[in-house]
Amino acid sequence: MAGVSPKGPRPGIHRLAINNYGRLRQPEGDGTDRAGAKGMKFDIYGRYRLEVIREAEAWLVYRVDNDKRRRVFDVVIPSSTRKEEIPTYLDDLLHELASPGATIRCID
Image (tube, rainbow, N blue to C red):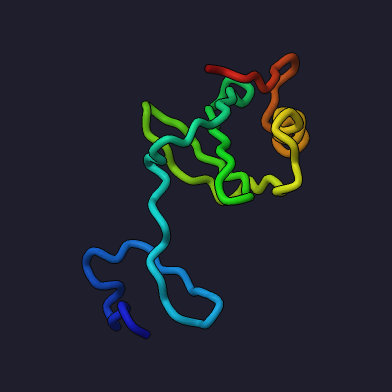
């Protein structure tokens, strides 16, 4: 497999993905910064913060820690979800993390 040696990936190749033709490709960015992309930020029950960005007909979710963003692959928001439905969707998906009285709130 190109880019992978018996000892692991070559230096400089952090993550690999397979395209539709079975070929390796480098992922498109690491999610640390999307120039010009303005997302919706949410405080998740006071535990952590998420940012949701609409990009190429899909909702992408990032965890925000100390002004750094990391892509979250465990939270998937259907592309058909409207912007105003996202807080409710996140609450339905993550409600097990809530303590009594805690809510998901939008932040600027």
